[in-house]
Image (cartoon, rainbow over all chains, first blue to last red):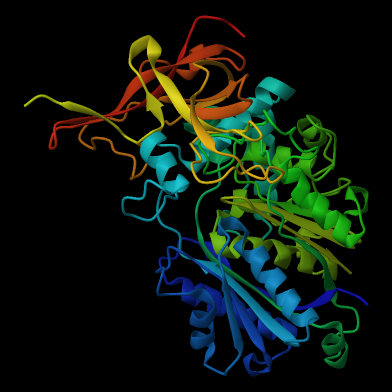
Length: 396
Length: 150
């Protein structure tokens, strides 16, 4: 029995700072995905919303909010939250419902209207919340953690700020080709080097912005897809939503300390590597099978880390892989052909869904000037605050 | 009215001067150490769970990595918006005996330019915020280089 589900439609609202409601972005993306699928909203049996917390938590919950905006039609509803991994949670929920026979067609939607400046926890006095504590006690913003990872790579692997800048140069060139990206201008290494330091050693152009945006997918059973006339749809073959294994010895947002490895040896794979590992295992593929990858480049240095965690190269070889051009268009495994977070900025609940939209367009051969020739297998990878793994394998 | 010193978070550190220590807990069954302190149940999934006893952490460790905050962090971090922002360094420190990495602010005046990965640091008492309204000095831990190189 196959455990694949079909991607019948993909749709996005352009990323930017539009200053409007997340509902509008999500609904526009949903309508685009439905049109792409050749289906009407009334054909959808279930809607899964990736929640935006800033959009009005706890009253303004995503799944039903989108269903209401599209017009109440009685669909089953689910709302999920897993920070940056919310979109993968929405996809895995939709897939489980389809494979369990609970719905033939499921609409997955995520959208956000991001605040200006640093992402930060909701207000109030919450000394039992690690996310609140890291801001209160240390002023440790997300970029501070990105800076720690980048400095560690420089010390252990010999990466340089120039290596990091080349990630931005690559992704900005791809984003310039993507009509949904927020930043559509090429960037030079000199421009990265001239931008202000935010969290040493990282500069403004090494770190992703926060954006407004929306993304949606229409997923279905393969039987439905065939009945609907989609003879060779893109298929989702695996979704990894793993948690870390104790002891997690890489300092992770929003934690102030790692687990202690004094009683139990650390696992063979780091958390990030295990996210991809679980996806590969479920899909029955390995990194050598990939045509492309969409990874969570919260910072330029983090993209290099993902190369290693996806097994595109050995530990410490990420910068070398980049400089060889293996992850650029025309290379062995192009990474972030969408332009990545570097070109989009993060719209938290939409982002993991947007990654799957890019895979869908690439695997259909419909990615325009960004097209990876002959793309057959793609992976997305991402990590949500508090230990939420996220990876999706799509094939055609 | 004089200022009163209060810890910004309860039960995470103790002592003054050279006796200042971070406080964690240790499982009496498996020996796993937890910081921030875990007081309810051991989080090692291979452990049936023992009593969690309070333990002081090693005062010295080696720098795992470091960075700084060139822009003013948002609330709930507290800073005086009337004053120009003064960046401070953040240091993640590996404690050998506990096999744990603990993040903290560097002591005032310590900049990233003088830090390297592997350098020795020690934990020292620090001030997070002086609140004139309540006449309270909120205390926290800082990391300070000992002068022992990587």
